[in-house]
Length: 429
Image (tube, rainbow, N blue to C red; front, side):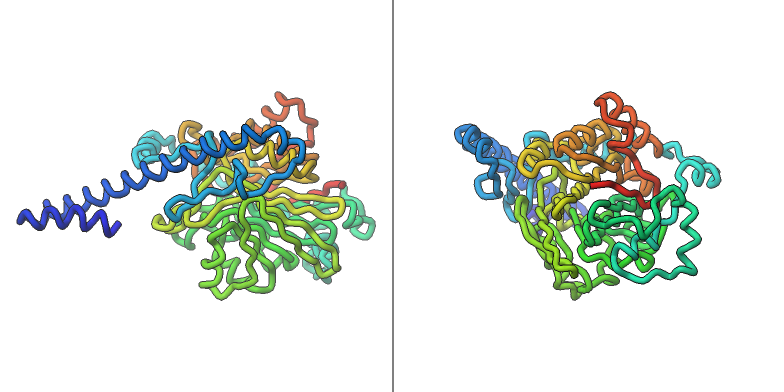
């Protein structure tokens, strides 16, 4: 930016131009600089896609037979140009300032939200997580006086003592893409945010409903998966609260942000990179960072300086896939082909309208069903809806559209559903 400013300002200053015109020239210089940089990055990105496609075409048959893919030479490996990550997919399109202005100018107001809070509470009911069960599976003691009151909500569940953590998974949707998942003795927290608003207590979209529980109410997670650094997926207050008591798994370029907060128990992963986590029980879990089609940034000046990703966590019998945000891309079919069936996939189904603007960065329910099939998921839950309204669809459209998409695709009734906020769900593995 300083180069652009100097370009415009220096030229006008040399000509003895007035201050107002001087400033206009500086702005023009900045604009030209950014437009040129964007054009250069877009050209380099497209050239890299073409080159990767040509290389893969020559060896595609051999690779498919071996089913071995990594970020080195992989058509769907991460790609960085001029210090910033870009999407290596033909399905991606960069948004311009004019696209953003057009969207703002044509946005529909309200998202159908009722002015009557009672109606909103009825349409988006909250459940209390089954904390006694979660604590038992995490090997923690329960506060029976405060937690037995929720047992009535789970009267149809097997008794706590009869639930085998090796053959059952739990998933509790807290809101947006935040889930608390337990599998084979491992407690996982995904894209954590417990704030009332996305940025600060006074800034950013506000939750439609209160958070169903606080971070302190849950058992301490063993690991936290962070798909990218957008405010609605990474709450700095949660990072400070958990600190170095957990292991954080993040995409490339994000570890330095944690280090500035004094958090160093962070494992940074590239797409297709694998690592292992040894739980307190001694069990070893395989964790893989996999591609998504999205972007990153928190300040407007750090756009795409860090990567974005999804995660696959695999135990002995159970596996969980955490998607984060994404538009649909061909990488999901490859993930399913490489890693096989997934026990439970956590997929976004909201923030998808209007499609002309959102489709490259946010899937809709039809795309989510497609990813469910690509991943060969046994069960999937739809998240990233009913929490913060940041797009134009009706606030209840995501679960309705998901039900319709699942029916059109011939999925079983409970194979892919939108869960109730706060409810702890059980899944056999």
